[in-house]
Each structure stands twice: as C-alpha cells, then as structure tokens.
Image (cartoon, rainbow, N blue to C red; front, top):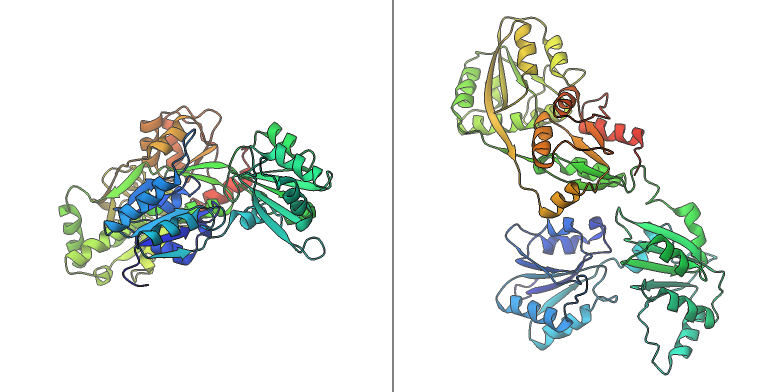
Length: 500
C-alpha cells in the first residue's frame, strides 16, 4: 500500500462481524476515522483504534443522509490528512453506492482503494440454508434491488426478461415493495406456486426466515412483521432449506445472553456463546485496576523470594498477572517460587501460571474455596494469597480453619466499569433472556446498576460463592454448573435449553 492512499472503501459484509475480510479488518484497525452505515456491526466499530473518530452516515428513521453529503465528508477528512475507512454493509459495489463515492474521490484528486466485501445477496441466503445455485436445481441467479420504477416505459418488458432470465432471483431492500414485486413477477410469467423466502437481519442472531410461495410470501411477511433489512429469494433452491438449514438450528440461536465479565476476560466466552447462536449482550459491569498501593504485595513478594511461604495460592488469572507484573518491577522472576509450592484454583488460573513457567503443584478437582482447603489439608505454615482489594472471605476462612497462616495481599482491584447507553437501555428494558455472573463482585456491581428485579429471566452463576452472593441480593439463581468454569457455564446453558 502506498502512503498517499488516504481513503479505503471497505465492504463490512452482511452483518456477522466475522465475515469482514482480513484486508478490511487490517485497514479498520489502523484508521483515523471510520464512516459507517446502519447495518455495520458494532463489534466491527470496536476494532477501530480507541482514538479513531466514528461517524455515522447511514439511514435513520425518517431521515436519509444525501449521498452528496457523505461524499463531501469523505473528501473533507481525506484532505485533512486523515486515514479514512468508509465502512459499508455488504459489498461497496453491490447496491452500495461505492462507485458514487469512488467517482467523487477521483474528481477531488484523492487516491483510494476498494476492498470488496461479502455481499448479502449470497451470504444471507447461505445463512438461511438456501444456496443460490445447486446442481440440477439452479445454474443461474440474478441480484436486484426491488426499487423498480413503475413509471419506466420499458418496465413490463424488463420484468418479462427478469422473470425468465435466471432460475434464482435475489431481491435486496425490498420489504416495502414486496407485494408489488410479487405481482409483477407473476404477471411476467413466474410461477405463483414457486417457493420463496424472506430473511430478516440475515447473518445476525436476530435472523428470521419466512418460507412461502411466490403468491403468498408478501402476506406471510406482513403477518410475521418482517422489517428491513430483509432479503427475498425466489426459486426452487428455497426447498433445499429443509436439509441445509444450519445457522438458526444452533443450540442457543437467538437466545439473548448478558455477559457481565470484565472486557479483558470476555473474548473467549463471548465468542463461544456467539458460535452457539446466542445474541451476546456484553455488559462489563467491572474492570480490573491496580490496587491503591503496591506496598503489601511488594513486601510479600520479597518474603516469597526469601522462602517465607510454604504455599502460594492463586485463585484467579488476574492475581497471577499482577503478581508477575510486580515481580518484574522488583527485578525478580518465577524463581521466587523455587522453594514454595503453588496452587491454582481453576483451569484459567492454571493456564496463566503455566504461561509464565510454573506448573502448579495443586489444582483442586472442583474450583471452590472449600475444596482448596480440603486439598491442602491441615498445616501450620504460611500461605501467600494475592487477591482483589475486596473479595469474599470464604477462601481465607477455610484455610485459617485448617490451621494455615494466611498472608492475603491486595494484588488488584475490581471497580465499576462504564457501560454504553445502548447496553444500559437493553438491560433496563429487559431485552434479554439470560444473565451470567462469574464472580460475586459482578453480582454486586450489576444489581447496584440495574436492581434485583429479574423476574422471567434465567440467572446463571459460575459457582456456589457467586450463587450465594446473588441470593443475598435477592436474585433467584436458576443455574449453577457442576464444573465451575465459563466453559462449564456455557455447557450447562446449552443443556438447560432456556426459552427464548
């Protein structure tokens, strides 16, 4: 890429953020400003640098930004020396006005690059289990916008050509004109009994597919309350959905799940839920921060290096990360544990230690404070326990009851995090089915923000201590997995099959 290219017209794909191309994502992550449409996934906007300006140029209810205004904005930002990504739903050149914008840039003498995207004309039917072509069924397809002008003098002839020109027809942007489109196709010779489908919010967790005949699809869409964006497919390939449907058949499809985990921890859980079809609402009610002071932790680490502890116990990956951060600041490393045994509560904590060169001597079979104390047994030595500034007393009380001298030190702090207004609105309006809690502190932060009225919602807690915290806040806990991990919680949610 040459340095004087300032503008990149990037196809974002049809809605699923995973469908953007590698090139598009690379450019998005390096831009100074991104101008985006209504159908661009918010998850993609999160990929832009935090300092990048985000400019909405899509359609709002009752308001359409003129194309000339969008062209002028792109030119303005480029002339200001900014690296501009124009992020467009689907593909820029498939009814996306990308050519208009490229022409405006060329006229302004601004160099640009086109990054094609996956068009909804192909991807949306595929996510509905409808191939646009199939051996022996359809060897051709036509993609159209349904905004055909009836006033054109050649309109009847054009519709006759359309009706006979391809075996599969794909209409974009056609909800409002669907009844008229159907009538024109039938008048032009298309079989009224031919199968048809309309797909709302294709490739997203809100996807809905309605199947009918060409003659009845408009009525079926109206009765189902189908709204834009929607894609209509006409042709024998629609019958293949019965065998090929996959996206809407996933075990958690459409289930709206609130994940309250801090942003730094949530990626794998969010991805796993999304892969199972859930509509994930990420509400990170907490964030991880440094403790008010490092004195206690630094002092304990110096004692650790002097062989003062029989055990070092880590109950979270955050405790591991902060401990090793401070070891490095003190000029120490993993050798500080040379004469101490190490225990890890849970697989993620174990993985964090292994990544830093320490294989734990003990990982309890169940990830609870009670099981940790039982596994360590009675003792009279000292235990180094890095923890959050405020944390449940269970683990300390259990260890002390077994005779251990527990030196607990503040390694990090969990504090309330900022949540977007959009997410706050969805939760306040009860626009979800399940809320998940992976720590007692998350329960407290969530209920402080939104209260304890979760009637009709499934409450899922990672383990007994988190469930106890939820019940103490007045919540009815519906699900606690046998394996107290995020993976165990997701598996239990699949088994529970809660209603959508």
